[in-house]
View 1 (cartoon, rainbow, N blue to C red):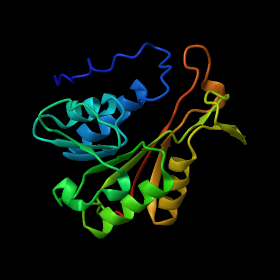
View 2 (tube, rainbow, N blue to C red):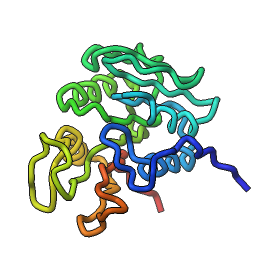
View 3 (cartoon, one colour):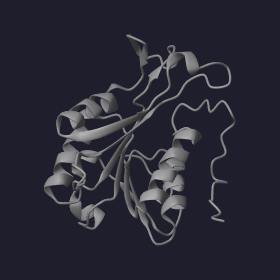
View 4 (tube, one colour):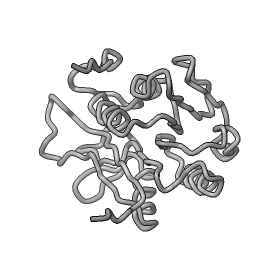
Length: 206
């Protein structure tokens, strides 16, 4: 039987965290990486390295995880490459100029992240096979963050990634949103930040 290394997911059951990815969401990404055998990952926005640790456990020692952040992020393993840089200055050379398997956006900068996506696509680092994931795409059921604003069905707490999802759909990406409906929230799970996973549309041959 396969033994999955998940002891790094240490949040309490309600998963009330304001910055890091929630553990249920991390588990979802862990499964995608393992299931698709993804090896080269870039995360944009690293905070204290919680997501990077999850990615590193998923790719194993044969993979590599890059983290870009304007603030220092402590390396979590020998195959964790941290890049302290404004996202606007990141180039394909910073990532070894090789295609990425997964690009994870969590920096909440619409212009910076969008420009990076286009730049890495032109450089051949983001390809049609690259999986793109964005954090904080769900609506909160109430105003958890002071800057959040109401829309139909909930509160937007980060609009950059939600706007990027809409853009990517128009660019021909299939999208799956790991979002909860408002009525699914209670004291046991006050909110879900939300993950959206996308990949370029491709007709399956039959």
